[in-house]
Amino acid sequence: MVDIAERPARLAAHAAVPDAVAAVGPGSGGLAGRLLGIGAKVLHRTVAIVALAAIWEGAPRLGLVDRVFLPPLSEVLVAWWELLRSGQLAEHVGASLTRSLAGLGLAVLTAIPLGLLIGWYRPLAELLSPLLEVFRNTAALALLPVFVLILGLGETSKIALVLYACSWPILLNTIAGVKGVDPLLIRSARSMGLNHLRLFQKVILPAAVPTIFTGVRLAGAYSILVLVAAEMVGAKAGLGYLINYAQYNFAIADMYSGIITISAIGLVVNQLLVALERRFSTWRVDVSAG
Image (cartoon, rainbow, N blue to C red; front, side):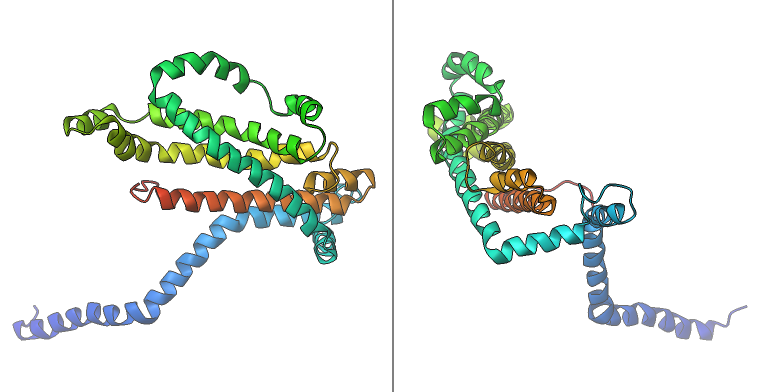
């Protein structure tokens, strides 16, 4: 049997435990927990890249692949640093970024307004749909000889090719974003007396922003990939030229340096577009788990 007189003391002891934990938590324990959480998230996101780097470094050294055709990652990074220090890498990156950003910017300026018009006005969509179906199924690289014949081997043909390749994901996603707006939202806005201009400004355009940015992100990837292929034909600067020149001269480490640079640029461009999307769609609620 427990003495009734002992109960107040035991209750006081149990009550003191949560107070002590609360006193420790916001200080050292809370900070340590947050740091551990950040470290776990960083590790979770980088473990695949670290594993790939380890395989790339170890496979040639262990003789699993011929290191003449696939040098260890450390040797590729040394070659990359030499290209960066000599200024060659900066020159090629600057040439490629100028062309790709010019083509991507022109695609955004032209494809988004056109997509909004086609998605909003049904007669225009019915008029242009057959033409869009013809060109959307024509690969950009298949038209490279046409661009070169008409516009020459200079910068104009490369920028025009990037513009063509980037326009389609932006245009098609913009049309899909406008047509995919919830009809209930449109009816609710019209019931409140909004005219067509205000309805488009306040309902249609904000609801279509996520889909539009999906197209812009796809176009950002296309702008690099298509340009690299175009730079392998008739270019004297650019990452595509660097890769092609290194291959012909059997500078394999330099070739992989160019490939790594392209991947890094694509990753940076994608993250910038993701941040821009969050800036223009702050009203969205993230429902993803974890």
